[in-house]
Length: 244
Image (cartoon, rainbow, N blue to C red; front, side, top):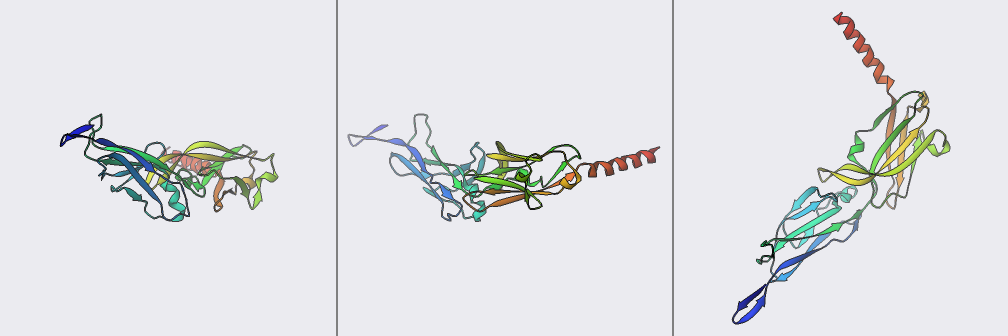
């Protein structure tokens, strides 16, 4: 916007904002995101930074500075720094919409070992019925995607018996706690289908994922559903008898 000063016209503009958002890995201790406003005058006030998930959920906010230094966290938690970082700044000049504050954003990706998400943690025990098939599964967040995975029971690979076991990996939405906030993420569902359950099949099953980082494993306890149905049925009969 031209502004006359001492018989000269000076062009003033609200800032356009870009954000430098490098990609990192979980071994990078120093991680920064930089706000790059471009306007006239080139003196800026920086407002709060926002960190959002890929689906737009607000995760956290930081004080306003040109350069945001991400807080240090444990190596295995640095994947949680992934997401959109939004910078807000102003230089005292309004834009065409009559707003002082302008925003720009960049996306940070932290490459790390696969993570079993919080919507899986409560599924340590899963259940099946004798003579029926069952699907047990875990949800995983993995950037980059894991390179391979294997299911085992009692130290034996399920691939040794393809008639009994079938495994699959499919993209899905997962829920994980990111810096204390539950958010949706793009992830994977790893499923093991077990045919014709017998008593010996009620045991522990471990899935191990390989990637360019450390291997990660998760163990599921498969139990018989009848183990819980029969005691409950007995209790109901006892209560019914007492009422009569």
